[in-house]
Length: 268
Image: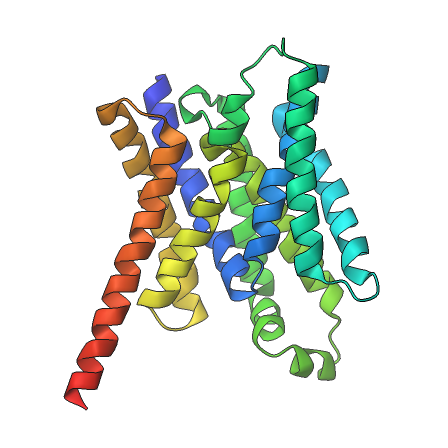
């Protein structure tokens, strides 16, 4: 399989994964958390490059630390998750830039961590995202009812005798894994577009969480494939192209949704 064919396969898998887990992000209102996570994993990737170890491994290790820090800040008196996300977003990204500046002779291009380099993905990258996608599908099949119950009725979820933290931890783990696996394709900065935009578009186009979970991966995969094809045709970076296509799907969904509401008003 050539590099371009591998890029297309990676685009389909990463897009589908991002759309699927992005549905959790959008429905559970964790978009800002995911954005902070995408930026804050940047220093982990840079540190991994400095040490000569796996980039996804470094990003994953940074993610674990980041989630812990955000949890501690969020539980601090008179602080919240939005404050924690904002602090970690800026501090993490700044740390990555600092590490890059102090180590100008890194063996890999640090810019690829920021905007992605899907044309250089390896078989290992594809296997990793495929494994995470299978795990995400399994989690939703096995615990989908509990996740949706917790998402839309937290008080009822607790009253039914369930504990929230296992579900929250499970969702955070899926979001973290998705951010890490999306980094090779769209980079640390642009990953949030591929994660949030297809799910947000699906939420405007269809009703019901099940349909959102079905449509969002399709839009994510389409964003990946179209973005890669456009990057080749226009000779531009694939990461920004993929993100712009995902954003384009969202804008189209906004237009369709607004048109539908206008028609209903006119009929009334």
